[in-house]
Length: 302
Image (tube, rainbow, N blue to C red):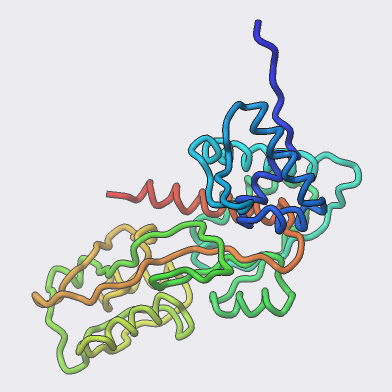
């Protein structure tokens, strides 16, 4: 019988830090160790596995090997479970509070399932929620009133300070009442049903229309996804939402009156954390939310 081998969690944590920072010295500072100690951990891990995990050029990290990439996925899972177990069971793990900001769409869609999973993992942790627009949530995070902000972003590139949890197309949508008649826009322009002025979806839509010669008029505005979808199903106007928010009685639309609608940038859900040490609970809440959005999108896929 082959002897069991046990991976060193500290070495795995060092590997993750090195990959995330692309630097042995930066990882050492983050871990509170010397660079030589971190290098030795990786050397012993590679010797144990008989595989090269990191590509190095003149002492710098130049990438991850195929074996390193495979181990990295396991390492992240193992460290997450280790940190969750400690946070949940250890006597010196204070109950604490996690302040989370998220957009209203998540409250109406995936939050109940995420909350149930999160409470099972962290029964002693008090969760404080703040629901607002993406711009307001980022301001609250910068102002120190949030530990974690989950927010929407529409653009060709994601912000450098955001962790992408999910990405999908932003699509034009219409209800059957509108599609059946499919009128060409008149003097009032393209009829739209949109969220409030600071919504990133609305900003993406109006920017795309402004880049063409489409005129438009607002026939519905509100903050609730449920209300917006009702307005679209009733034929009040078109909207643009991520594919995962495509509801019953709504369909994707590519043209109006035979005229193609302008293309839209992708929609993303991002997570940003308060400066300093990020708790395992905050990272887990973000991961659970990303997984829930992905599962919902898969369920609604045609």
